[in-house]
Amino acid sequence: MNKAYIALCASLVAMPAAATDWRIVTWNEEFVLFLDHSAIQRNRRTASYTSKILYVKDPQVTELLSQIEVRCSTRQYRSVAVTALSRSGRLDVARISKEWRTISPGTNAEREFSIVCG
Image (cartoon, rainbow, N blue to C red; front, side, top):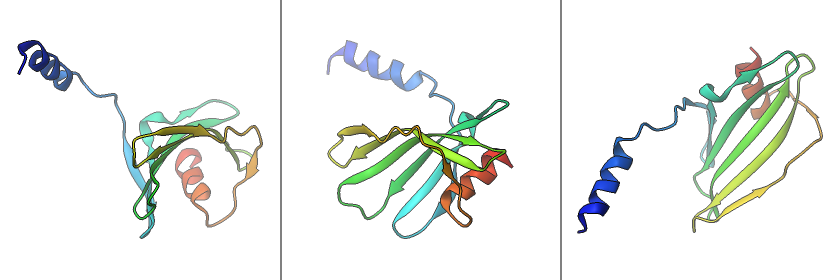
């Protein structure tokens, strides 16, 4: 192997990874939902965070990464950006929403809301 290639690989391994704190919110036999606690940002009106769903049984999609905003005072949320990673490695960015939705009881949105706004 080329010495320059080996040196490059070694330097990439030595670089610190971006600080993330993924914790499981919920799971079932279809998917696992994570929330990155290090990505939670709060201000006076909204809070934002990143969530990730790893699909167990979907033959097309392996991962869905979402940037979410919530209004803690009114129990509303919206998806700022959603990125899907397919099993072939292709990325699709879709569903950027400006519409605020009400957080319904017993949903994954409510579980995330209680972590971010709790």
